Length: 161
Image (cartoon, rainbow, N blue to C red; front, side, top):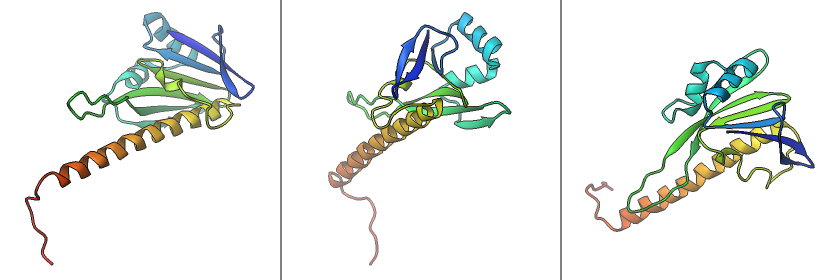
């Protein structure tokens, strides 16, 4: 699914255009993958990497743009087990456009609440900031669980003084 957004009045607004400033390709089908390849020059390896949860994060610099593989934390649900999952997304950035390639449409949720979004760079930075903030939330939970576990169990080691 393709969602297109224009930046007006400091926020993302949905539009029906393929030349929008911000575009989200959510779980792209074959036709959408062809569009990414033909119109935006993304090869099949880059597309596969963007959607692979096991892909290593990285940034690739190209003459006209940069391509990031970014790890995104998934929302935690603790139904009896502690598992903090991540997924990958691809971010193709050029000064006038940001393409987001992901398995779902969640990467753009909640953007623009902390600052106005006037350019594709603002969107990219806010997306990265939101993800880092989400990771910090997960780390706080991990820390609390670790403290709780250590208080409820006797240590198996002793430190000498």
